[in-house]
Length: 265
Image 1 (spheres, one colour):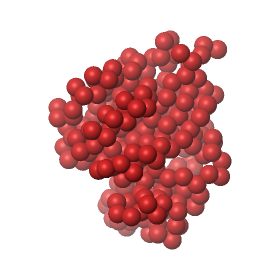
Image 2: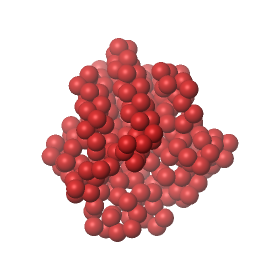
Image 3: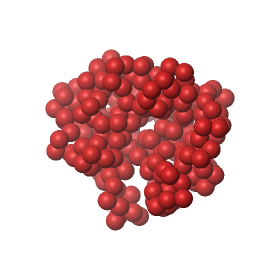
């Protein structure tokens, strides 16, 4: 084995999307999958169907809303079920673990940032508080000098290159200057937007609203894999898999996937 694949996917209800998820896992065989918006408590997440595919699971569930998980074909340890600097948060939006791949370790997190709409509301204020706490913790993680992968639905559209029609999201919380600035600050401290690093000026999206948006390609890129320098050094390819979005009963998001070298250097 010389490489592994790591995917992130907001499934918008793991129970509603179970057949699609299992089929995708069987066809693509990713080594690690970060899931968001499970919309289920841990005890009702359909674990058996996923474990039958040889995945270990770490889950932070929540009834009807939110919920995040890490699926890994390799051992999971040192699990953190929340942002340490946001302990009182009742929403299940963050899970982090150490994944050991034959002696090579990665610190990996599944991230589901708040949507924040409408702007000028408590939901937007919560989004800013949450993103600030996430930024501070992400920067703190860099001090450990580990390969870090922070993947998930960030609900941030970083630039006009990441949206089909900028005018449609001017008043959306995903595109506010304050939100984009926090994202840029995370990058400025040392993280790399994996898709943009490997795809330069390419316009591709991870989210399309239900209806005709997908078929007209009116989308946005709001799902990201942020990498520390040590993870970036091992990253070989990053791409968005649009196929699940075109299937029957899809999520409104589609997976983003990165390949990493796990050769001992």
